[in-house]
Length: 165
Image 1 (cartoon, rainbow, N blue to C red):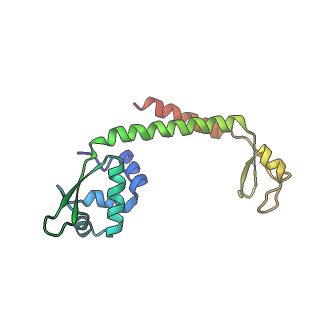
Image 2 (cartoon, helix red, strand yellow):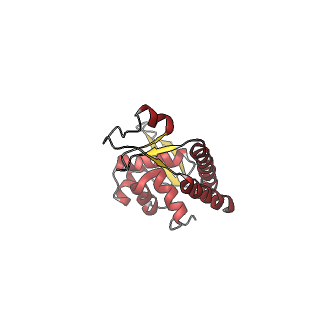
Image 3 (cartoon, rainbow, N blue to C red):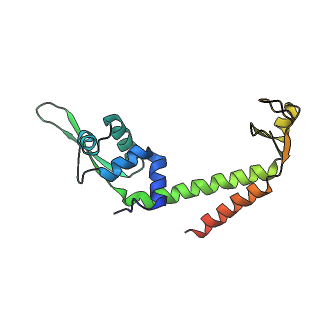
């Protein structure tokens, strides 16, 4: 069984299904259950339960089985959590994060930035020249921003992710 107290797992699940979704996962009854049974057992609104189940199913973390009632013809959806695939999902998420961080480092290295001293906005050189180095929100003079420390933080994060296998 997956450790829902692991901060990495919790963070991934919260990002995927939100706090209500995580609460649903933590309190979901064992075995095959309907979405109505899950809503009743967890106290979470039925539409949130359904949304969460579909997201989990799309990410291979829940299994759905359909059953047709022979007398009424109605379909019943039975759900089971299957968190065995969370490891590959976390690895895929890590690869996406590394790719995005590398793209961000390149963007930061390839540009010169100016920011509003009031914190309204940050622009690259070309955008700042279009505004004549004046903040479009408050009118203050834009100031040069040295982004070396920011680039260093991203590179440290990349190095940390590279060490984590």
